Image (tube, rainbow, N blue to C red; front, side):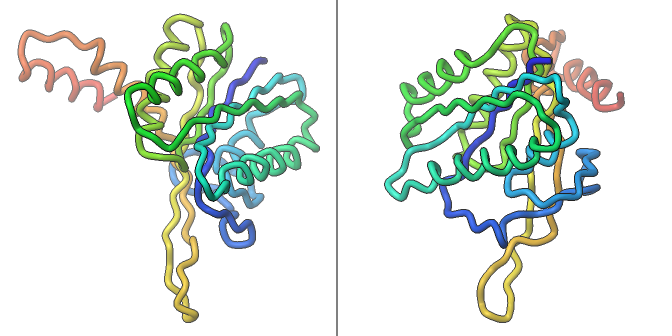
Length: 213
């Protein structure tokens, strides 16, 4: 099966010894992978990727002077490759580099670059844990386009959450990891675009019916 994975690469410095977390049986993602990962989607892929799969990982990298995103992209690849060593799937990595500028032109560039990675009838996964704030909004557009015009199957959009707890040394450390499946937000966004009603009141009733499912 063809799987395409979009991953927002963090711009901050990553320290594996403190940033890697075990997300097993946390949040609502129904993920039982017991290994520690820096990138939450890798805990999901550890369970979803099979030997016969062809996986294309699209690394969404924002270029900054510090260059952390380049190092972190390499860290992602190393982490997933170690997981895949026991699975044996075919995994390839492609990078989309964009500047840290939130202009209309840059948003269009991100969108077009991401759409160029979509393939017909593929399963699509995404991790929105890291990256700048507008990226998930662009990603929602990409997922809608992929499902509508490429018959893609949007399988899972995940978000990894941690608390930053202050220790006796005065430093803050990530703790209490939670892995959330936020795919429902993608379908809610699509519902809003497709919904028809005679009034705002009727639209709210339709929305209530959707939430009751």
